Image (cartoon, rainbow, N blue to C red; front, side, top):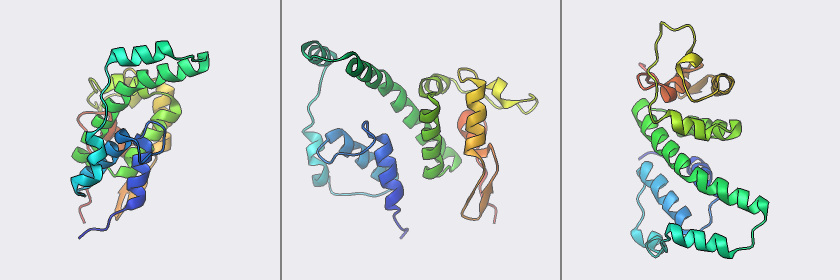
Length: 194
């Protein structure tokens, strides 16, 4: 039986929550935890997540009515706009990175680091647009940034520099190896051979 890394699970849970931290009485946050546990092959009785089933559903009209009936400052309106605008992008990014992580054996820590860099560099929307049709890596090209459309070159170089190299278990991962596995549809992080 493998050991559960609760710190990794809690960090990932906090990252995926809209507020940046989980709230136990928020059905959406509990649903996120349930998904993370499932991804880590951890099962709990459904009774723990019963509250999730009682979650109210809302329509676009409900949200519009709520906004129209609220006295919101320009600053608050900007936050609402950004939250609504970012929902689809964040979900698309999470789905894409989950798929890439499984296909390329990329650790949760490395995926979390990449997500944090996207957020810190303010390029989540650009990345969400890029992953709709990711490029194939062409080794004959002189530089990788010219192969990635939709993301500014200076931001790509920052991602390359900040992702850096790492040692995971007994495998040394070179600079760019994880990043290229994420960015390009024809590259994968190599596995240890011994």
